[in-house]
Length: 325
Image 1 (tube, rainbow, N blue to C red):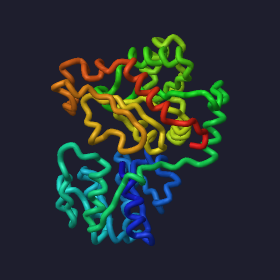
Image 2 (cartoon, helix red, strand yellow):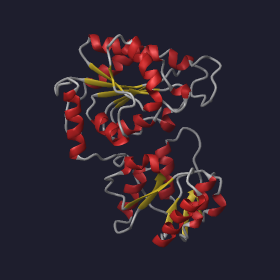
Image 3 (spheres, rainbow, N blue to C red):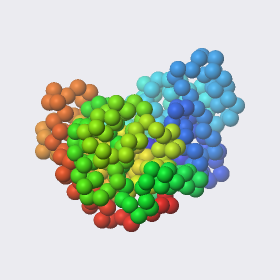
Image 4 (cartoon, rainbow, N blue to C red):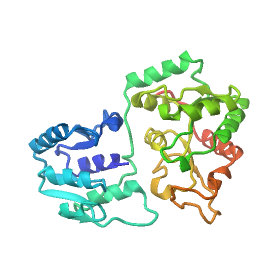
């Protein structure tokens, strides 16, 4: 959700050299981004010597400005160690005293992308992120995905629905039996159903596969991050909770049915694009943002497979199938 920052900076400073520092595991998301000149990777688990070598490389770049989109103390230290004269960050970050431009972080129901763009606005410029929430894949990657679909028996004219059951926060996960019921209904209507997720989702994926009685194509844990992006780009609709693949699908302009319970979609939901958010607004505990639920995830249990099916078909009625990504 920092990707619009890169375009905003390039629009305002077209001749600037723009680099980003991200976790090594997610760096592939940013490959081929035309607004980035360099991706610098960083992991907390690295040795002190490795980290020191990266800091030295950053200082050699002699950056004029560093924008810290994180709240962590470590990233605040890195911002300061960069040697940049202009250091922008939130007033709420753990190392705010190391920033010399402290942007007041807006509270309440305000999207995380806009929060990040406020850091650019802190430089005194006007920016808009709606046209910049994008990820890029290559033609070769799109071709690989199309060939993979054909290899598993999915034709170019078929409607393919992706189900993404995982989420780092267990409270954001829709019920496996609901996913399985939805898969059976989709299958009965002639749609092909692809079960996605990372290796950490393989257990719940197997449960859904068994409950769906063969209504899904099991692809959980089978893709690298770049391969997942390519596969997502070929789908007609993705059904997902509040999780990374939801944002990837949105950034690839794939329609999304987003299932929300304790999280707030105005904060971390789909930022733009063609999507339908389902959330039980009438519950007094909705958007509690808690890590422990005393009600057994009632907010998600009450989302029925039938209403998700209706949302999927509503999105399908608005979209023409393309295999160009």
